[in-house]
Image 1 (cartoon, helix red, strand yellow):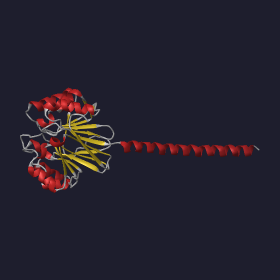
Image 2: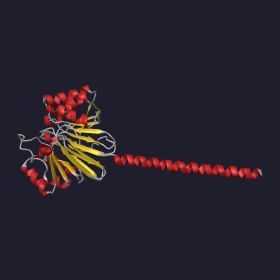
Image 3: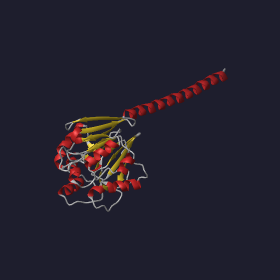
Image 4: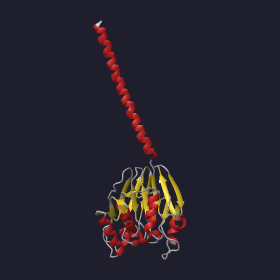
Length: 298
């Protein structure tokens, strides 16, 4: 009788043990599925903000981080702040000033004065302008040190692959060619943001990239100037969409006719801030959605 009781207890204990393992396994699978569902809902959003004759690009990652590339002229600061606030931004994880020209870094000063910024990247080149000096002062006032933007440097954002692919060299004659160029990939979609990089920088990127420059979306260099978007670079990137950031009736004639014709011949769909206003791409890593709107909100 005692042996039978012992056997029954043993069977029950073994059953409970297997049941516990099964439940734990189901729990783990269920948790993994929930994580997968959360990640599936994550979207990458890239806003090309209309700041007139200048650049400003806000990247919001699927995991809730933000990167701001350039900020337009200083007079665009309030417009930029309003856009950021309407997107629910409360801090900037990564700030990039592509190069020292005022139409790229001016508005970043207001952002540094009004938002917490975690990390700032600038290329290793200086400028004597008051705008550049004030930017460095604003960085210092945040207790930050400038990190150098250069080819091959990975940008610390989670859930996306982001890297600087330029500047490659350090002895350019033009400030434009020191532009920090960012390549971002999420799933099977990728973007290249060219700042004002011109043909010399493009040639260096082609030489150093081992051909890995393909991107669905190309932020065209130097506001669509004929000094950028060389044939070899455009062929390597092979974009489906091009974004040109420029002001209405600007004094430089941007974008230049040659660039528009080149993009059209390549079958690239063109968006322009002077014609479309703010241009917003969103992606789940597999597809792209594109919206345009006027004004400083979203």
